[in-house]
Length: 251
Image 1 (cartoon, rainbow, N blue to C red):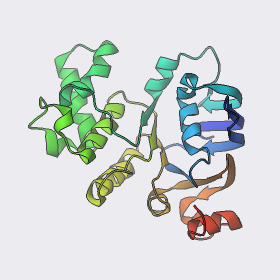
Image 2 (image 1 turned 45 degrees about the vertical axis):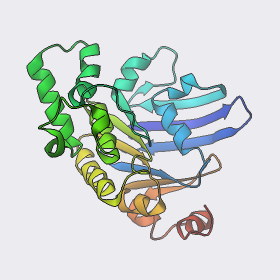
Image 3 (image 1 turned 90 degrees about the vertical axis):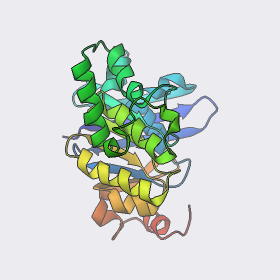
């Protein structure tokens, strides 16, 4: 069974824009699943469904089932704060808190009730190592986070998600504003992270999708057109629309 199972998911926003139509998917655990396709296809919308960020949007219709393990996350009985600890999210544009590097990471833990300095220090070091940032910042943890480069800030946002020990990490074009070296570091860290976490990534290009996908899903105008193992889907797509998109014939 998938880590996340989606059954007949439909989502329509109040402005009439239908974002998702009858989505059925199984997201496998401990792999990198990539959602790719043209802009406006519903990729970011489905990520927001997974940790209930659509609760903050003007939604006209939301129907279907989305299970995290055996819990229907769309149920009104779900504790949304607890859900967001299990399902972390990193956005395209890094937003660091106006405090030190260290405090960006300890803030969420302290709010959750962790007060022991040793535990906080260990969590800071562990999450920064997982995000491939520790060696670059270990001697300046008390410096303002805003002093970091864009690539470092993005990896700090990844570390901030990891410090809460989620089960699933959602990444919405996390390298779209980064240089190739920073992008490579993020992609390399994801290969390590999937051993511990289930990762769902919306890439910023087809090339990135093909590089990192263990499992891939092609979205077009709110529908799933094709899904399969990454190494098979990008080499031998079965649907002509998938092939045309991968070949750059539309986008």
